[in-house]
Image (cartoon, rainbow, N blue to C red; front, side, top):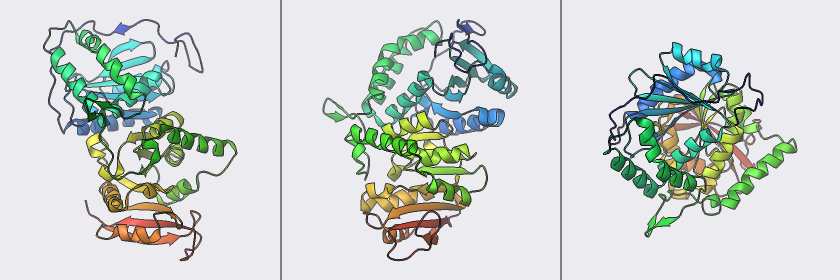
Length: 401
């Protein structure tokens, strides 16, 4: 957003770049992937949220350390989205009090870091294209093996040179990163020398993975329903009734985020997961109060992506499991259960005339520490009958992890 544009801001933004402390020459190292990086992010994310509360609209792990299996400079990059970049009194003072130090002030962006120089916090407004680009690049590298290898190879080559400071090193990467960013905005899977650019999803039959127009139609469908005033939140109201206040909730198969976004506005901490990057991009745009992740539910491992805290509840609604092959549905529930606290709940909704039914729910639960507690015919809890066209299963986690 141009610095001269008020657009609801408290004041005009800065117009120059301020590098607090001046140019620094630092030793640059590209380290092998470290399993402690997601845990380090989680600790600082908790610290940032404690300092900022709801003023932090998003707290996301970005940069190379957020991509499993990718070598990186051992610096945790964190994206924090705020409503107004010029309202520094809302976010800068609390973060300084939490022990971080201001390093960069420039139009649309502030960067703070730890005294140990091992964490960088990037502050942007939620709708800033630069913030969106961070997330698109991260998600692309997580699923694109060829660009991941290109990124690592480029860094390892450049780090052999002597750079005046980290900005000079970053500038040298610009051409390659720009190419990868351009591919990250397309969402398509292409090929390079006969090798798949992106790892194939396991067990998903969602048509949007091969036809992006289907995903865009799906997003627009719910926008039109909302514009007509249709009730799109019955599922979310039930989840809210089951959850403690300010619960941590997993929206499994989140689509464009209508359920998780609604629950985030009620004060819950929501992490939404979907395999389709187009749907996740829509969720981020329309519901910035939650965290949205591109990932395959069959192989879900949020701990590896920096979401280390367990969940108070989860929900998988909207016929998500219709688009998972039968042999992988049990794996989806197993992976969801692995992210739940003991005694947490799971809500599953499905239609009787679709591929995944109430009987299939019972079959998928076999052998898992998940127990069916209640079954209803609707999200407003009408009694279940065998001939009901819809089923809502409320399940409890009996595991002790």
